Image (tube, rainbow, N blue to C red; front, side, top):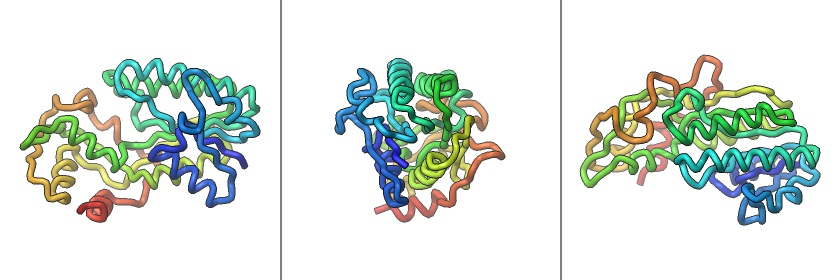
Length: 247
């Protein structure tokens, strides 16, 4: 089948393109570098011509309130172009618990994206993943100074990007779910403990201070960004991944 991967040059998208191609599908990346502008719609009709499935892993350039306009405009344009092209399946990558954290602008924006897809003209699938292993550096940097990193003690269940890719490809090449698949890593940690584990593996001498008011996850309550009993659990453990990626 022909699959257009919107955001197909990024961390997840490039791997989705590679995996689909290896499986014998015609995978086409769509991104600004390939002449596609989600906000103006430029290049969308050409990119979706003859497309069976659209996989949307494009991301907003910011995580603040402006992300609402990005996802509203980009999703509306993408769904309209898909309908014109006769696309039979729209797949989007979202976040576990995204609709349970209204205090985060970015999560509200992703919830809007899901709602637009759910009420759109095309059969759809939503893959919700927990936080990626690969984003831990950004989480640490967000609340760090020279000697300390401040992190809340919320439960988190991170997943390797490669495992997210496998789930997205499986969903994209199957029948539309007309619903949500939750995917997560196999282990639950407290975020502050995960920070300590990461710094130790990287021989970083900074101290992690538990601070439930620190960083973007300070607005998260309970275990809403961990997976429920219905989730697909990925095989890669964070401890193995961080040891393999540590210098």
